[in-house]
Length: 375
Image 1: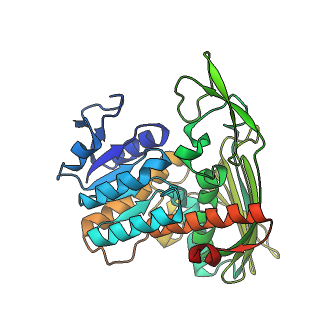
Image 2 (image 1 turned 30 degrees about the horizontal axis):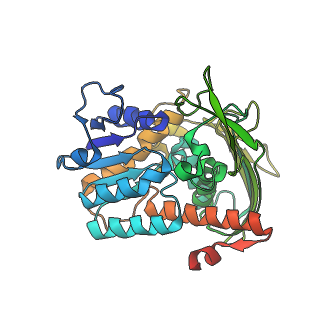
Image 3 (image 1 turned 135 degrees about the vertical axis):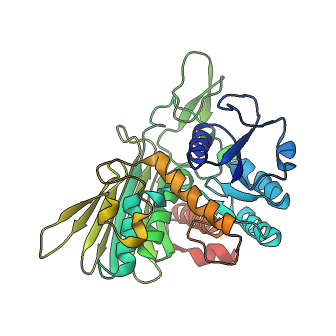
C-alpha cells in the first residue's frame, strides 16, 4: 500500500507506526511541523497530497470537526479512507460520507481498533460458535483519568472541535462497538445519565497534545458543557440487556476498558489493562483463564495474534491488525465482498447511539435508536 497519514498527534503517530510495521510506503501532510517525517514525502497542503495519484489509502487522524471535509475530499480524489472515530460530528455527516464512498466505489473504514485485541477476537469467535449459549447480560466500564484535574486540557473539550458529546463519543463508542460486535446484537434503546463533574476548566494559552498536562504559562477559565461521566442502560435486538459506565475523571484508571458477557451456558470477561487474558466463567466446573496463544485460540481468531504464547501484544498491535484487514481488502479489489473490518456504516451507527444517549439523558427517559434515525 501507498498511504498518507493526515494528522500526526497522539493517534496519528500510532497509525504511522502501524503502517510502517506493515511495510506500507507512507507519506504525510506537512501541517505546522515536520517531526516524525523521516524519509516520507512531504506536502504543503491537503489538496497537494490528494493530487498524488499513487496513493491507495488516506488515514484521517485529525480533530473530529475535520473528518467530514477531509474524508469527502479523499474519496472524491479516488482514495480509500481509514478515518479515526467518531466518524463525523453527527449522523447527517456520517450519511454523507457513506453516500460518497458508494458513489466513488472506494472503501471507507472507521478506526474501532479495539476489536483487534487477540482475546477480543477470541471472545467474538466463542460467542459466534455458541460456547457461552445465548448472551443474556452485558456490563462493564471504560474509565480514564487524563481529564481528572481542572488544569487538564485537550481539544476534545471544545464542542466546536470535538463535538457536542465527549466521553461517550471519545471512549464510550469503543465499548459500545465491542459489545455489539462480540455479542452479534445491535443496541436498540438506551436510558442514560450524564454529568459534567468538572464545571470549570483552565485552558492553557499554549498548545497541549492528548494526555499532556498543563505546564507553566497563562490560562483562561472555560465553563464546560460536555460530559465527564455517563452511565447507560442498554437493550439489544435479541433480548440482551446491559449497562456501561464511562468516565474520563476516575483517578488511577489510565485506560480501563472492561467488559463481561453472561450467557445461558457460560460467561466471558476481559480487561484492557491486562489484555492477553480472557476469563471464562462456569457454574458447574472450574472457571479458567485463557492466555493469548495462537496455538490454543479458535481458528478464526488465531490469525489476529501475531506472536507466540507468552509474548504480550497490546494497543499498538490493534492498529496493525485493523490496517492489515483493510489493506488486504483494498488489494483484493472486490469492493462488493463482505467486510470484516468496521466500516463507515459502523461509524454512523455509533453516532446514532450517541444522539440517543444524549437525548435520553436530557429527557430522562428511554430512547430508541430508531427514533433518532427517523428524526
